[in-house]
Amino acid sequence: MKFSYETDRLLLKVLDGSSANDVLRFYASNREIFERYEALRPDNFYTIAYQRRALNYEFNAFIKQTAIRFWAYAKTNPTHVIGTVCFRNIVRTVYQRCEVGYKFDQRYWHLGYAQEALLKCIQIAFYELNLHRISAYIMMDNHPSIRLVEQIGFEYEGIARGYALVRGIWEDHLVYSILHP
Image (cartoon, rainbow, N blue to C red; front, top):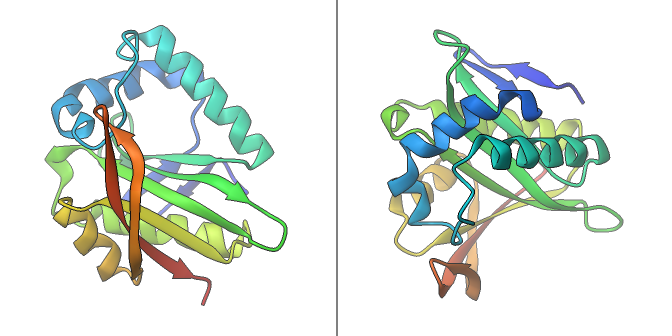
């Protein structure tokens, strides 16, 4: 696996702690949107120190291939993070599976960037990581995310009841998966 990839309009990179400023800016400018769908953040989440530690942790996970996060940059502005795609809970042995998560700066919604990034990252997961199955767990009211995964070939599999603690509430999630072709 490489540390960076390109699509027609995007650069996808694995980052380390030296990019903490860029990542903090991305999270801070989308705070209200992102927090609606995620676990409660620690008090120090929106600090350079926290983001540096998180990025270094993710970099080490990439080296071990236990989790992989790509940060997306538009080629037209290669110093500004516009999104991220993460493969987490990578399980080998007879399963060869993972879960995918993604988020994009709200200023880049409905422009095809998330779809472009996901398609490239899924290709990497199937053909370089040799994974067989990728699952997405999506909150019931996240209609844009549901449309996105359906457009790129994920199939609905059911409901994971009480799947994740989001904003202090155990939320049900829809389960979508895509299999290696």
